[in-house]
Image (cartoon, rainbow, N blue to C red; front, side):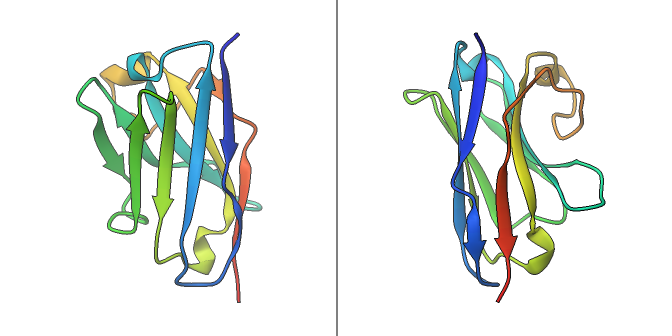
Amino acid sequence: QLQLVESGGGLVQPGGSLRLSCAASGFTLDYYAIGWFRQAPGKERVGVSCISGSDGSAYYSDSVKGRFTISRDNAKNTVYLQMNSLKPEDTAVYYCAADRAALFRLCLLPPYDYWGQGTQVTVSS
């Protein structure tokens, strides 16, 4: 059974850092595009970063470019999202997702077939 499990969320002060993990089971990550999405209270879920293709091409939304870094460890079948210089507006539930068709389109956009349960990130002083 294909499963994604996020971890690493928490409470951090503005300017701080967190690293989110997305551990996959039941499938091999490098055959899928993996996206990180976030949903703030009262707002739609939006893509913030994705990694796609055998070369691990990475993409970022303008709101996180230069502050977030996505990476993939094929040996651990895990994707990471390193988040630096966090701002209060980064507060949201963060989800990772996997999709094979996203390998062939802009991977920051849905739809995605498989989703994790989400992890809360709160940036506050």
